[in-house]
Length: 81
Image (cartoon, rainbow, N blue to C red; front, side, top):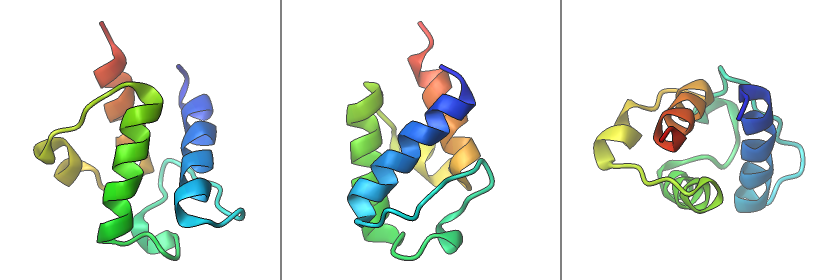
């Protein structure tokens, strides 16, 4: 899966969880850039991402994520056989 496709899929997940249709993510997007993305919604987002992509993140994985690009790379890494 390419990063561009991942970003579109992640944007859809963020729109659903945050109930906002105006969200378009880039690799450099952080929680500070998106209204409503706080620690609570972060856990909801991670849960939805895990379901959507069939991956599991450890606590260590999650705390290393600094932006959406890190999330994309983590998904790609976890999905590799």
